[in-house]
Each structure stands twice: as structure tokens, then as C-alpha cells.
Image (cartoon, rainbow, N blue to C red):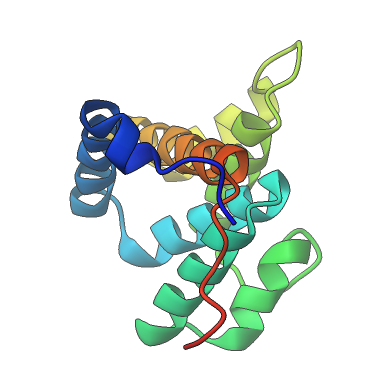
Length: 146
């Protein structure tokens, strides 16, 4: 049972996050976006988002093998250079520590993503982290059917 229905209690705030979601969906490659959403959700322990984004990716044609490998992406051979850079940046931004995003992570991403693509990628990572924090805090559970 959830703690609070954020959309009902704070509809303007919820709509603002939906605005970010619409932006990233329109401006970032869908495959990369789903990998980023899945990875951040795994790191944050958000069962609702892990379930939703893995199902959405499967429906869009992503392979289950690649989705399972997101948990161990550094060792998995299934991701290209841009996807690896996006996943590394997702790890660094999601686990943002006292020293921020390491230069080597940023530089590797900047090598394969344009400045605009990087900006959109950072917004996407920030957005899924907002969704994860809302879902985990409110104890939003994935549907048990479907």
C-alpha cells in the first residue's frame, strides 16, 4: 500500500515532472533513454520503475538479454560506446558523491555525445532520479498483473 498519491496531493509538482519526462522522450534516443531509466532505477532500488521501464523496453523491441545485462553493464559485451558512456554517466549522476561526476566519466561521454545530447542525457538522468525518489518515498508498487 502506498503512502501518498503525489499526483493527487501535489498535482502542479507532478505535472512539472511530467513536463521533464515529455522533454526527454522527445529529445533523447528511446533505446538509450530506457537503458538509462532502467539503470538508475536499479541503483535506486525502485521496483515500480524497474518493472515499468523493463516492460516498456521489451515492448519497444529491446532484448531481454540486454535488459538483464544492465545490472552488470561494465562486464557485458552488449552495449556500444555511446550506450556505455550513457550508463557510466547514469551511475555517476545517480550515485552523486562528494566529488561529483568524475572528469573521466564526463570526458568519455563528451567524446561520443554532442554538447546538446549530453545536456539532454543529464536532464534524462535527473528526471528518472526524481521519479525514483517519488516512487520509492511514496512506496508505489508495480502492478502484480500484466
